Structure formats: structure tokens, C-alpha cells
Image (cartoon, rainbow, N blue to C red; front, side):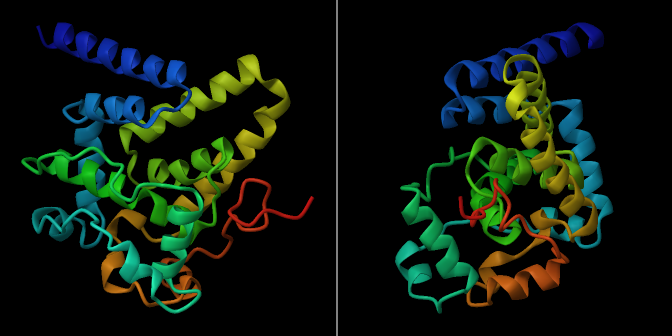
Length: 229
């Protein structure tokens, strides 16, 4: 029976992943994939890894709240600060800061999923990855490497297989972006543990120094500030 249930769960995960591919990365489809993995063995292992990290259990047990940004307030922060840079990214891309799907925080897995979903775009800012498909995969690679967040592992695996099979001309760039994200993931402090709300006014560079991000993606083709031309 356990094997049967596991096979059914795996099938649901794959169906959700196919939905992401067919939608071209639609946010609802991605949220469906994320939710399909909340009660999975992979999520249990992800939570185990989170708790093994310094202060991880305290963060989870304390239910540090998911991000609820006040964009007007953040936009008034000093130039170069995390808050203002984040607000500028959201406005310039036309992103809704509350795009994420509301989830009840009734379990550790629900809390972690919501915290990661609501802070995703902050990871773009501090890591320097842009919002192209390669930039998205690069920033997902950080969390996939640091805690094995299931949906991000699946999305990046699928991205590489898709490029290798159907867009070979861009496979190398995708692999490079993911490798860059993996490198940051292995060398930096866990981004999921960062209490961004307590340092909105800190310069982005200060955050990078505190987190150990020594080689952000700015200046790369897949960066927020790519090289000219």
C-alpha cells in the first residue's frame, strides 16, 4: 500500500510538472507543482536538512511570518538598499508583490513553502540573477542546492532536459546559470534563513557580504544587470 501511494504521488507530481511545461511557466502551474510536493518524502527530507542548519529549527518552530511587503514603504528606502532595490525590481517587471498563492501555515511544510514563495524575488536581488528563464533557473538552483526544495529541484532538472532535447543552442547557457546558482548555494549562508524584514534599509552589498555571496550574477548574460550588447 505504501508503494502504491508513493507511485500515485509521483504521478501527480509529474502531471503538475507537465502542466508547468505546457503553460510556459505560468505562475498558477508552478504553484500547483509546489503544492503537489508539500506532503512528499522529498519535502520531509528538505525539512530535515533545514532543521540541521544552525537556527533552522528556531525559524521553523517560530513560524517566522511569510513576507508581506509594503511596496510604497520599501520604495522610500535609500538608494541601493535591499528594500528599494526589491521594490524597483517588482515595479519595473510589473510584478504583483502578492502574486503568491495563500496557504494555511498548519504544518512545517506549508510554512516553508510559503516563506520560500514569498521571498523568491528577494533572492533575485541579492544573488544578482535576472528574470530570464536562465536567470530563474540560476536563482532556483541556490535553494535547490542549499535545502533540496523539491519543486525547484524538479524545475531545474526539467529545464536542463528540455534545453538538451529541444533547444541545444541554449543548453550551455542554461547549464552555466544553474552551475552559477549551485556555486552560490554551496558557498553562501542559507538564504531561506535570512530575516530580510529586519534589514530592508541595509545596502544590497551589505547583505551579500553577510550571506557570503562573493560572485553575484550581475554582469552575466543571465544577470539582473547583464553585460551591454
